[in-house]
Amino acid sequence: MTPLVSPDPVPPAVAAPVGVARRRPGRARTFVGQVLSRNDGRVGLLILVVFAVLAMFPDLFVGKLETATTATGQSLQPPGGRYLFGTDELGRDVLNMTFHGARISMAIGLMATLITVLFGALLGIIAGYVGGRTDTVIMRISDFFLVLPTIVLAIILAPVILDVVGADAELFGIRATMIVIVVVIGLTSWATTARIIRSQVLSIKMRMFVDRARVIGSGPGRIMRRHVLPNVINLIVAQAVLTFAVAVFTETTLAFIGLGDPFAPSWGQILNAAQSAGAPGLGAWWYIAPPAVCVVLVVLAFTLVGNALDDVLNPKSGARR
Image 1 (cartoon, rainbow, N blue to C red):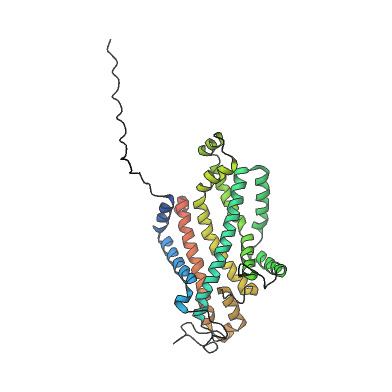
Image 2: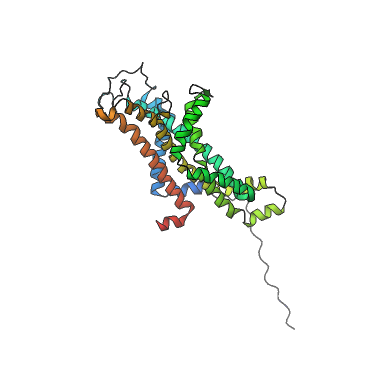
């Protein structure tokens, strides 16, 4: 009989030297790199960085915010010389107001986006993972907000809440008018985020690693926090970018129709003041153009970044376009 020849033993894996760790590029770094590899992502992020710097440090570029008592220009002075963007009806520099308005508009957009995304993501994860009656109740409530026009609902809610809390009230130094706008935008925008996150969670909870977590005794809270949430972070970021654009546009609309804070010159508030001063009829285009262009650029930038994120997260969508 021919003796059985055992196969050659598999050589042991070469261990890495002590103290040398194998490093893999982080998820976040890879994700950002994919977004920056696209032209729309780069252009959008560049515009957003410029406006973020203006919002954080307006004093470095145009000095302190001018008021009716510190204004030095003439009423509705055209652009030129000292006033590159002209002046308003009180002689204030429109460039100064526009740069300081970036802080208010971007801050309101950021706070509203945080409320929308956190609230919507939380309810979406709970509805998708728990399911059953909880899912049904949350989705029926979201359906109610989805069918209501955001702007119309915001116009209705803003004056009602202001009457309840008072227009002169403050919270942590922030006037009630700004807080109301943030809350209104958050209440009218969370439903879309909740729906999108829920649909992703329904797929994730059926995967093997979630079943293994259940088998070893992990509770629902731990599974949602440690296993479900990390797998929807990219989707939450993408939704936050799009929500920010909607929040800035909604704040501008509410301020333009008179629901903004007259002591906080956001872009919408500047447009409202221009309309009240009769700038369109007087041909004072310089009073209207700067804040309007800023709103368009910010919304465009978020749209470009959102498109880049959508193509990174869903490559098939880019192929369809």
